[in-house]
Amino acid sequence: MSELTPDLLRELVAEARLAPSIHNIQPTRWRLLDGGRLALVDDTSVRAPVADPAGHDVLVSHGAALEGMSLALNRRGLAITAMTTIEQPLSSQFTALCSFAIRQGVAPDPLAGHVTHRMSWRGKFAASPDEPAPLVQLAVARDDLVCIGDRRAIADIAGWADQAEFSFVRGDDYRAELLEWMRLSGDHPQYLLDGLNRDALAMNAVEATAARFVLGSLFRPLDRLGFAASLLSDRAKTASAAAIVLFCRPVGEDPLTTGRHFYRSWLEIDRAGLVACPISAMADHPDFNDRLRKLGRIGTDLRLVNVFRIGRPAKPLKPRHFRLPIDRLIV
Image (cartoon, rainbow, N blue to C red):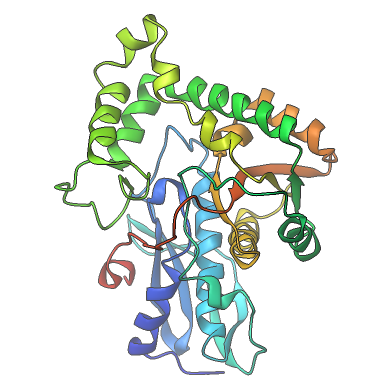
């Protein structure tokens, strides 16, 4: 076993917090327990109840954070051991979902070096000749990823993605929650800390201002006139992708495990020299989920968890991560 000191914990949390979470809400906290064990703690006050009514995406987010901690430990020659997954309420706000000890002696993880570089790419992808090598690399590295590279299929999926997203956006509560987590003004007090700011959304100031009105007070009249869908469309971005990637995991799998694999899959995309953007609405919408399952020939023993559009960025990548300060993540 290895002693986990407060200073080391801060270093580890600084890296673990770079893991993705739904709407970048960051529900994961950490607590150092007696005996040098570390607990992954759920902040039950941090939720997206409309987009994630069952709390499944929050648990997947916790799993991604757990994998982030594992990768941070790996960079220091350490690893997770003796994990327990018994939930333990700590207070009215915090619940420990699992705890583990730390051991020394572990082989370097090739994905650990991609943690700081991985980010969501919400812009268009660069036009480039067909390059099968990165997709082959992904297929070899992950058996839970299905890559769709056919241009006609990608064009169809781009239209489906818009329909899926708009079906959710039409809900008043969904839009209100989305706007609550969007940071469309640089003056927003949480702009650099959490949620989806205009940098992360690849919007300029004019686009961000327009989005605030289109998703807000003007949505209903614009929708009645038939303009809202086209104003919110991501079809061109999705159609520019080199491939659509389906992330599939076994039916009934523990969401924490799913989250760990989700993060590793995204890091594998980065390792292949590509960038990615989730299209979660396609997995969440029953009809389009079914269409993608048929297109990807996904068996009944697997669940389509999420969908990525992937490719090469249309402009130089400058990875930035907007995360809560470490002191708020250690409780």
